[in-house]
Amino acid sequence: MCKKSIENYYLTKNLPFCILVFMIKRKVLPLLQKELNSDEIIVLTGMRRTGKTTLVRCLYDNLKNCRKVYLDLENPLNQTYFSQVDYEKVKLHLEQLAHGKGKRLVVFLDEIQNIKNLPSIVKYLYDHFKIKFILTGSASFYLKNLFSESLAGRKRIFELYPLDFEEFLNYKAPNLKKPKLDEKITKAIFHLFEKYISEYLNYGGFPSVVLKKSHQEKIAELDDIFTSYYQKEILLLSDFRKTNVMKNTIILLSQRVGSKLDIAKIASELGVSRITIQEYLDFLEQTYFIKRIRPFSKKIDVALRGQQKPYLCDSGMLTKMGKVPDSTILENSILNMLKTYQEIYFYQSKGGAEIDFLVKKGKKMFAFEVKTKARQNDINKLKRTSQKLGIKECFIISQNFSPLSHAIYPFQL
Image (cartoon, rainbow, N blue to C red):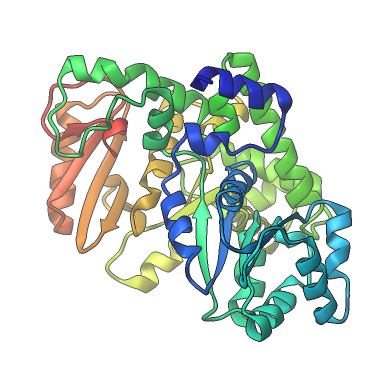
């Protein structure tokens, strides 16, 4: 069966599918496969609809020489297996549900935030019976807070985001290889990537959106992703009473992407306290809907006190929120492309000099300024500011083609 036929089959049947792994190569998959051989508990977290279930189903389907069981914990029936006070009975249920042969029992549990006492159950079964667990969940705050102490030294956490551009490109144009950061880009090479960057900026990298063909289908899918996030994270998982204020907070944040947050002003506009807005921002970040970056300073206390800049989890989600300038969509998308770097900051001097992103990789610091088109004046300003900070590697990330040195493109990140 050809790639197109396989895709159509799974999409029309609406089945749980490993097809995304076949069609879209996720960089985390080899790391997860390697960890299957370890004794540690694997925890895969990230925002809803980023492909966590698809990845663990693929791991489950290809796992041999053991007893294995997969349970979706959004299913109320599956939740009942973990309602036992006696954890020995939980183990008995899992053994009865398992398929395959072998001494080793491997348990895949999807959407673990639905079982509040799950950390203690997993800890008990791991410590007493060496059961291997692969767990997924969409709420970072739940996983990290409840699992941090109970499973300290027993787990490895992996975070899954919407597709980065390289993963997106591997599906859209598998024969087209992403150029390196220092590679010289001609106008002809730029045009090879132009339409793919345009699509990625407009619709983002949620796997189910990438697989849709028409504009209407992609927008409808983005609507569905947001609705799912709002209903299952905000309404069900959080204990916020003023959910309409949370919705308005999200709208205001989408209008302030890439701008410094004035929490007091937002609180005043929405008629709530600063503490409430801070709680909302923390929740949105801990459930992967937004990411905040801090100002860069060599004095750590200054950086922590400084106003932060918010970005949304995906450029498609940002465009879904309403009219947003192209430059803002580009900057939001670049931030998401830079998530593989160890640390991300922005810089603004007292004199007004700015750099959109300062990132650290290994011992090196890089400075990136984002423009729809790189101009010589932009490059000169960036070089001067970077030199004052002692940063040698500085680039203008240009959406449109520019023949200037120090100009690079989103597809090089």
